[in-house]
Each structure stands twice: as C-alpha cells, then as structure tokens.
Amino acid sequence: MKDDRPSITAYPDGPLLVRGAVDLRNADGEEIVVRRQTVALCRCGLSAIKPFCDGTHKLSHFRTDE
Ligand code: FES
Image 1 (cartoon, rainbow, N blue to C red):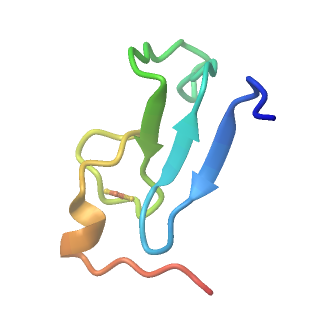
Image 2: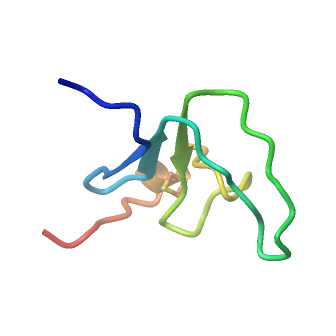
C-alpha cells in the first residue's frame, strides 16, 4: 500500500526527483513556490535554474558514484 509521504529518488548521473508535497526553501529560508507534485532538483551544480534541474547534467556528462 502506497502512503502519502514525500519521496526523494536520486537518479544515476542526474537530478534528485522529489515527489509529493514538500516545503522547498532557499538558503535564506524563503519559500520556493512549487506548482508540481514532482520536481527535479539539480545535483550537478550546473543548472541555470537552480535549485531545479534544466538538463545540463546530460551535456556535461555528469556522473554519480555507483
Ligand atoms: S542535475 Fe540536471 S542540471 Fe544539474
């Protein structure tokens, strides 16, 4: 049975996929408005729309550890 808790999935060589209702805030504690139930957060550090992934990780051949 699936519950309603948010989940975070680390995609190999890609972003963190956040599913469910979460309270997303910037470094100053200000809320980042999220209009979707699923968002991809950048972990390669190269996105132009941080904290969200813009797909740049593919172009840069970002790799995560096994
Ligand atoms: S993880 Fe996708 S742009 Fe950084």
